[in-house]
Length: 334
Image (cartoon, rainbow, N blue to C red):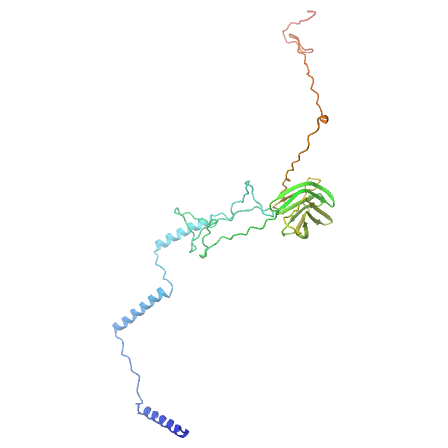
């Protein structure tokens, strides 16, 4: 088909469409809806109200229940009683005691206490009560929920790694001079080691960093522990390795120069405190079996001689004794 015929066909279609538009009436208005009657209007309002109610139930916020003034006043009184029980809880927990029943101290010699009691809450954040209306408290295994309804979980603390130390037939020297000998300690978990020396103070040594301590590398080296305190050198030597490891380890050292003891000689101990009062446990007892002495060198003790005491004669008066009143003098020259 040629281009001329295509153009002629397009012109014809356009002319036919224009003729159809001209044939329609000019003033044609859109159809009008009939006015609603009163029953129809009422049905429409009920339908809109039902749709709004369903929207409020499924998609909107929940409607608050209607509470009478008496119930609201009773709820306020109960809430005030619960709050008074919460306010009456102690702000500090009970003291932490050791196996011997003594107050436990932290490394800085401060008293340790158990956590303060807290109310046990449900998943809505409300305090829980028992059948008698008494406030329930949190336990170690049941922490309940917080005030916002979030589940509380107990934090499991990882047990720190133990550092066993063995000192057998040890010798403590200060600047090369022997201060203590035949030291025997079997420490299951070393926290702090104490070495007191007159004129120096108490040197606190640990295998882990702590506040105020300075690291001294390779201080633990096999069978010896060597630390430097100003111009002094403290060394502990043992017949067996001190730490249960082969490579050298660092020591963290702090000197308490204000601490004094009545001893004129160096003193060694260990404990869990890094500040006074320090613990000074006794060394492990060492049993020695010495051979019995020969008979020829054993001393022979002489038997004690009996001592006789003369008895006084009857009806005799000791010399110088006064004469009773009314008694007649006797004896020679009567």
